[in-house]
Length: 267
Image 1 (cartoon, one colour):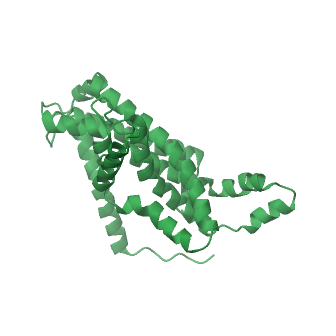
Image 2: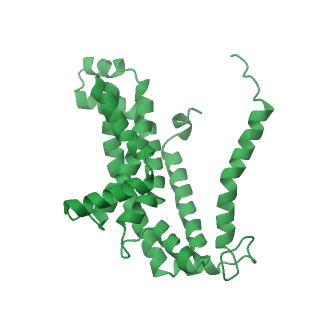
Image 3: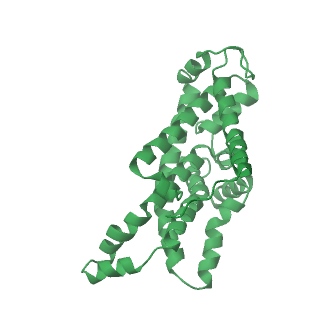
């Protein structure tokens, strides 16, 4: 075994700085949510569970939290299925059409969320198909946003996939579906799980598209936090952010128990 070269000090310093830049905003949100004062300020005026309790007893925030979870769960399931199927097609089909389709599927990542949300809203209203300001229309918007991340992760796993493994299973008597289920699906399952995590997190925190597609009776958590910060500026919004962070951490930990995340990220 060859010895691994040591990581240069400058790279370690950049990694620490980057980690701090990512972690500090999270710490600020947590401390602001535990603020004992009457307004959203930092540093906090003492620590208290006052605004956490306010969140847990707020019908508005609890309803928004539940709607965000429901929309994210539905969008994640649909995005995972569509994204995995699209990735299989894009990696196994040939021709110029594939390049066009790949660019089409990745377009929601490139387009600003405000443009995409406005375009969907105008389409729903002008077409008269009844999706404007509805749960189904909101889910479709979230699927459009989250599906490219599933496609990207699954495509990365399929690029280096050895199709001779499927052919070996077929030569031993397995049907095409059985070969795919027993061989291909098991190999790319970590990438599918990674795409599922990304889709859920992105959908749960989606704001721009939701801004155009939600209603006062269909507010997600980001929308409820935006309204609270705009009109009252209470720390309840920061307390809601704590529970959003907790949900993301729980989803990551739960998935890491089911799937080895080191395989996903090449560790």
